[in-house]
Length: 165
Image 1 (tube, rainbow, N blue to C red):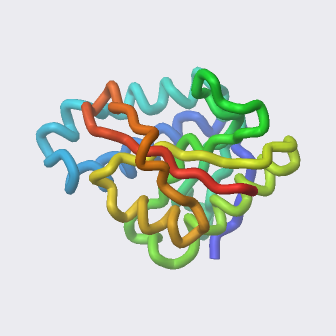
Image 2 (cartoon, rainbow, N blue to C red):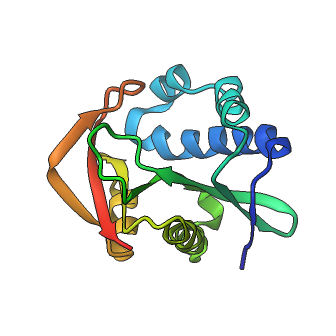
């Protein structure tokens, strides 16, 4: 079972590298290896965590190895209700998936969102990411088939999943 900690700014490089590995694992099957390598690079992933100083990120550790993380916060969508939080990213290395680690990270993020008085959580999921859809549905999130957007980085269509918390 993983140990969870709140991330700190000094975790940015490790988080960026983990994020990059998880993106490659996730999108290789969706986009193919060539397109995945075109869209994602480790330096951009590290820069993303340095920019936000790892604020609102929970890290999952197993035997002193960073194996997953969940980033959460207020919903960034224009027009969203003030009581809506967002699961912005949740990734667990493939070899540690299907053991409840992602579920634990998500529950911890929801606990923090509740503490900040959010009543609903949303997450944007690529339609092609069937594993993510199953994961969120198993945890009580429902898709809103009328609310979609295109991921500007990959060109993949996304759908919003939501849940009262």
